[in-house]
Image (cartoon, rainbow, N blue to C red; front, top):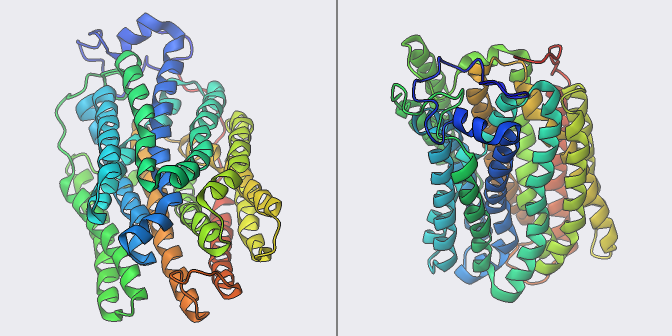
Length: 505
């Protein structure tokens, strides 16, 4: 049965005889008609809100958490870094999970894990247990992240992708836009533990909707479990080990243990080489590799992933750095930090709504380049801020950076993957999100390491109660590093050239 705007008449494989069973893609399309693709998008959007909130909201509470547990900045940053590592690696499992268990079981399983891990983190009295909860949250959030892009590219015609992208993008940033403001108030009123519980209502809402609108089938409308494909455990092990060695190597390098750091980074490089070789072997043997390297033969996608990696460094590094800067550099309270970030978050939502509508009709490289330029400028201008700077200047700089994000976020993933065949879309969404998050995990570590190094060079430490111009100078140098990273991403962004747009049947 074909309904206007739905691209299911040519699935990845021949439809399974049981595709009309209750909860299958075909059955839900028949029941809800053309509304189904929008109801499905809303459902995964709410789940994505929960995942994004869990990734960003804890940054507001890191200073208070580090004081309560009596830990330094290097250990405190692992609240963010451990989440990022887990989310980065788990993204690679999304295509396999969707084929093996289907959309509904995969999505609902992630929502259950995210919610229970959040509640466990909120009641933990030991820092190590908090880290375990953050890892569990990251695993759930990582699997969810690629799913919306897969749905937009598979369920919507090219002519509708811009509208779907705009709707999803605007909705998914509203919660994290308001989240830091609410989070800042919660930290002031009830402490950092309350931040863990913010994901609960989103998870409950998304699970309620998933039972009604998310199909039990796998991508393409075929039944899940078809052939029961094996997970590429070897590739997943190499990716996990390589990511952990890279990040620990960076931290150890800053700690002065040059030999150990060199060894860890060397192991990370060896894991990268081994991962590539293993993926090629898996493909040659007819298996299901964790990452399909054939994706990178598409020039638009290859350049898009390079942009995603460098952009991830700047985006997630700044997400970690800015709350720390405002609280420990400028001496603002968590509630003030949240209030300052609220206007920028709302502007981001509006920007995504506007730019998203044009993302399917305007060149991706132009939209992404404009966004990276504005983001780089917002970082560079942080150097003009001092202890006497008016608060409206901070708000203006935050808004400038969020406008830049609004140009990049709805454009990059969809534009980079539009030239891919439908069979490669789930793998493509997984790969580009993985590389962006790998850049993000690296960025969080780099910002923490560089900040500690420059603070030491300027004769200051974040353990000192009173801030100083020397401390601000150290922060400025880290912001300049982020600006330079965005400028490097610009070089790759300009190399993205989209194929002529056409509507796929």
